[in-house]
Each structure stands twice: as structure tokens, then as C-alpha cells.
Image: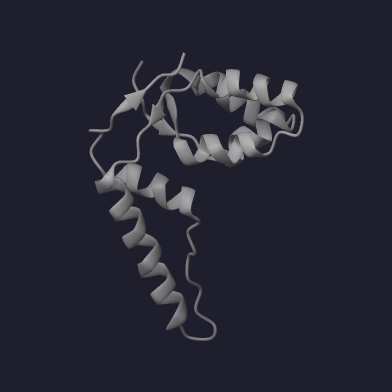
Length: 122
């Protein structure tokens, strides 16, 4: 298995909500994807019933789980702080990309060479 993609919680939530494009994407790329601990938490928090929670856990356990080590965490913090500062000093009509925390993690994942510890819970 070669990890090429870090899945965001949105595509997983869309899959669990029955959105076919998300399910197709996951089927087509399942063997090259991983998830972060934050993504896993975000997705599992949304399940109301124990049965749905258990089924969701089984699906998520298929994907290797990346550890967010200190280097990745510090770079994510740096990205978010830069955006917050940029937004505070922007011109009235200037658009500033505002990264949510999982998106910043994905950006960092793309920028950092793939020396990431992977954990499979399967």
C-alpha cells in the first residue's frame, strides 16, 4: 500500500451520508489513503447510535492512521497563525484563504516529505 492521500473528514462524512461521488472516490482510492487522528475523531463524533458508531469505526479502521508529531503540529500552528494575522490586516475587499485545522494538516502533509509514521488499526 502506497499512501498518496490524506482524507479530509468531509469526504468521509459525505460517504456516510450516502453521497455517491464520495463513496466512489473512496472505493477508487481506498488503498492509497490514510486519515489523521483529528479526522477520525471528527467523523466518529457525528454518529448518534452505537450501531452506526461501530460501523463507522470499522470503515475508518481500514485506513492507516497518521500520527501528528511535533513537527507537523508546529507547522500546522504556523500556517493557521499566519492566516489569522493576514485576515486581521487585510484590505476590505481582499480575500484571505481561511484554513480550518484539518485543511492545514492536509496542506502540511503535502508540503512535508512522506516521513510520517503510519498506524493501521486493522
